[in-house]
Length: 601
Image (tube, rainbow, N blue to C red; front, side, top):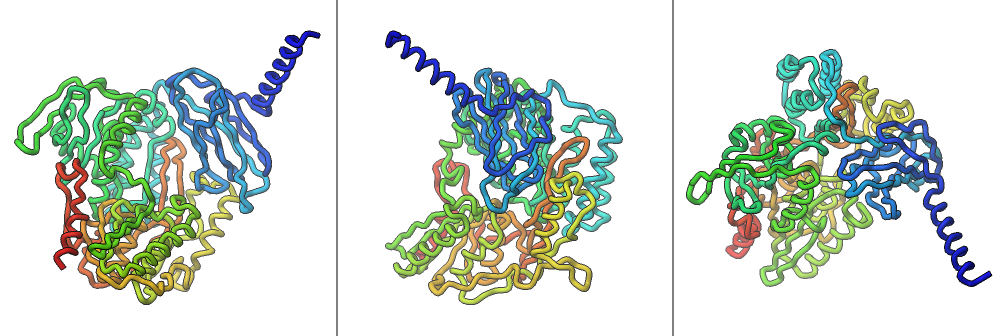
């Protein structure tokens, strides 16, 4: 046999071997058809193959039924596109949304999470959904059932009854329920029930459009092609667009809708703690185009806008600005935010020291353990190293910046507080849950008996039923950390904003109570007197398939006589907000104010 022939045979052998490995154990999937009753054991993994079409938006959902899995999407070359593992345990969904740039076959790999707490074996299902051509119309009876289910879930969990009486909440529900009409779509229904969720006045409550709606919008929706910043209730545009000079202009109208009408709508659908609005404005900023699409126009081809020059008060009109597809909008946002100073944070936390002015700036952007290498331990190590550095250099002034801190894991705020106090403090008056079980769990991730048992077990690990019938936190469960020996004793300044929420806001409340800190910025987004968060019940309404979450634990902070109005967050001692010009040039008005205060001491 000739060498060339041998080479060809060797090539064919390795080609066939490689192809066999790529296709090994792959199960072909049909789009829009559920593949159910699949079983997976520890040490195994299963791969599925399916054809996706160019520029179509698909949602890929793996429903976990007793085993925690990770999912990975690969292209036809075996390159990983997305890796997903949501923190929802052994039950619930793992989800990927993807739109290919070319028609091709793709592979989804499912394997168990390699942790000792995971099940040795469990079931799951897989569904690859294509975008619908039109939204399904639902009957009045089906929508009424969904509305009643949601309302009763709120009442049963007491969400919405901290800041409202039952009569007030019931009255709003009756008004919104009267708007239900036969043959509404799930998007119509979403628009109708969102104000009910907002009226709970719980910033951790949420409701989202159904998966069908999201698929439809991603495929067919058209977006407002601008980013915005809201300062002093005015909505400014952050970018120019092609030949349109819009950067720094205030929005007056969009397609005939006044900015007052638009913002009024957005404020009624963005949940917040109590009567707070600062968090609403900060969250609306990042969701402005998305909200406009959901609540005003889904498929405009063009936008006519009326703007106001803030320097001259001159009105400017632009007509026929092309709307963006979802894919275009994603690319647009990714590009534009790179040019905006401090739009997103790069590090979870950082320390800077100015020895000349004996000032340290500690920025803590998140209390999420997932953001720190080593999780909670990594955060503690960062704090230990930072405050040792502060102590070694005998720093007199400390600035703590939590303006972007929307919270995270329970007690992370206490780790930081332990470096600011010289004795332990009472953290909560009490923490309370409504019950250990709930009647609507059939519409949640806890519909299976095994998952309900796990859920109840987790609650009972932290709560007990007291003699007065309430479900209260076990003694010692939520308490402060032991103060650190090198705790900071100098002047303390804390920068706050509407994004200081949940654990971030709770840290501000604790610092308000137990330190002499001065607060600079705007009212925190989270409530000073507490919030409802901790455990969450994620629900899917049975007919409209709207999804959302209900927070369970009512944390009531041990407040002091600080004069903070009920239903509000920590108020700044000095209310500072940048002008739009300062914002564009990256001038940090709040930080510079503090630095001047320190220099003038």
